[in-house]
Length: 238
Image (cartoon, rainbow, N blue to C red):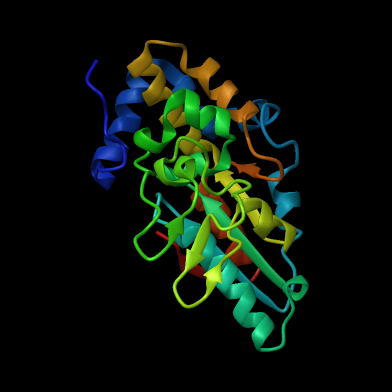
């Protein structure tokens, strides 16, 4: 079967793929709209509305990550915390939410899934960015999740030096990450079709490989709405 380049498809093409997947795979292709409660048991256990009740602080922001965009979805939360600290507000008094949706969802998963399903190529997540360096070849080629427990010195910025932009580092400073269940459903179905395997089984495997502390939400746009209802300013992160 011809390989699909989901990263380069247009918005119309992406919506078309949802419709085509629904026709080919049945109602399960739109499971997040009907059976989110059933699927959540395979991922993060917390109720998503309860999770958003944790959004508190003097300064609140939500970063909208729709695709691999070099280091933007991870360096910008760090910059927000650093510059707030420089102007008198500690990280503990800030609220930062990162929504991983559409083609940015692979960053929610552990290294084993990146290696097994070649997420770096499938999601076109192989580029870290020319202004930063990746010290580890595995990070540079994205055969593992480059933003989960990066090694010291993996990322360095000109004029700044090493920067701690790993998901685990950001979580330690209170940054909250969530991932779109709707996108997981669609992309798992697309890959399952390419590999001629069962879509729901593949999706369950992906959900079982979520990184610690990442919350599954019904959809990314749902999460963006909830974050803004909690007073978060919106920032597009790619």
